[in-house]
Length: 336
Image (cartoon, rainbow, N blue to C red; front, side, top):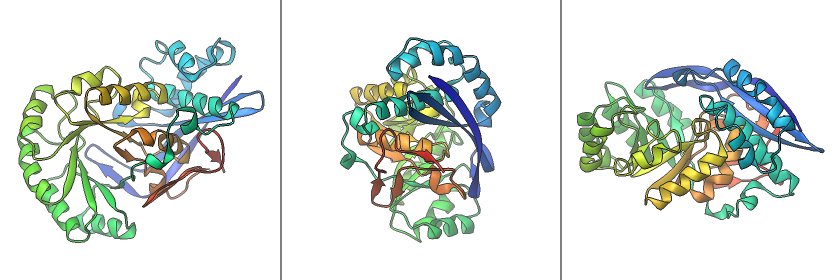
């Protein structure tokens, strides 16, 4: 077994702004595992909001290299458990490694990842397409540039309702909104009333992560379903979110990979909550992995590669009517 990695810059088509950050280029770490003529790829992007840098991820991987290359593990979940303590504060790095392990594992069996997981690719929900915060005029222009049946609209400004009203005039598409922790309970409840009238499907993470008491009020009085994102980063968060959110958005990089992501999805389902897996502006490596989990989900946000000006990889193709999987085993992603 050999572990290697490379750093790639992912230039975006447009400046991408959410409530707490903006970026024009996303740097990302692509991990490769090679064994007996097979290879697996995984990915995790950096994120200053969470203090995650590429250097931090590579340092974590380097100090775990001996376990990866010489340790006793066969299944990806076994490698994940071996790294549970080591990566306790480095979930992003563990995600890239875990994803590569699943890709390799499926390839060694000559199967696509969804086949290994026993899933039906016909059961995949349509991905939304994200419109980042900008002037109203530019947000309208971005939406017109990409005609899509479902838009996720990033909010967290002083004129959020004005934005949604303006976009609604241009399309009959479904809207989902994501405030990325920017509101308080009063704002969320008040905004939900107008957003419901504007055809919004649900609100994602209206309050800051630790606002558990305030979320009780939002959950009880919101006119829209509410979905957890920043409040549901790791497995232990799922039960905390029950009774405060109607759904959870699992981000594989925050959770630590596919292995814990699968457990989080199942736990949420057992609690009667709806599930989504979201992306963090990954290339087609990370997006391809998400697509193989999509049959498990009620919603999916895997538009990351569509936001890039240049994608260093190719894999699944996300379209307005579903996903096309390449005729390759594993997650189906390759580097160009």
